Length: 230
Image (cartoon, rainbow, N blue to C red; front, side, top):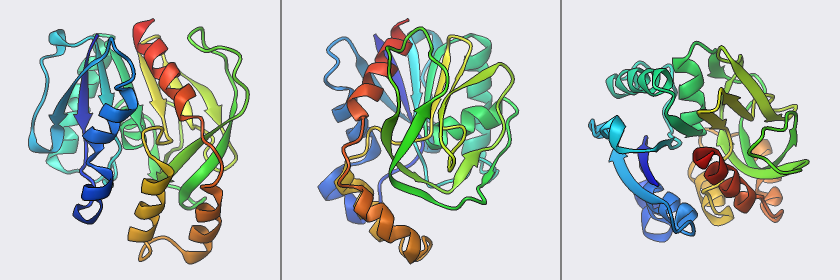
């Protein structure tokens, strides 16, 4: 299966040598799936795939906010609308999750609940046909903005008190995931440390301690693969 990775940001220069860029993370994360052929498109630089040439599309995270109004974001919003109109399999991670919702009419804003960082539990609220019998699960997070209302036709798959819309699905073709299943705990901690100037110290301490908890990255990879193949 040919999958287009729409890369929406780059890892900070100071962290690239140890952790790689975001495309490297997704190559490692999805590389275990032998039938996935991943091709990278830097949408910030205006690189886009031919829609008909790919069976699925994956949007990465970003330090940007979906409402920033930057030209590259506005162009990507139109591309998302086209993917939706054509019912192409599309998965959004963090910023990608937010941008898909925003492009399709949802409210996305800086959350009054503050930063979501570290390992966090979410609860399954709806069982889709591509899921098994999962109950609660844990994911790595790094976000301040949140999807606050659902796009038309969306259903919440999983959520928590801090992030009520943690995973959503639209029809059989769009899946949004607020967490970062492609992150390692080491990178999540390094990113926290790099953001000390904008994340309150009282938020950093428990988030750092939470990183000892094993997250369900493997399960989410199975979700993504089942979803785009279904």
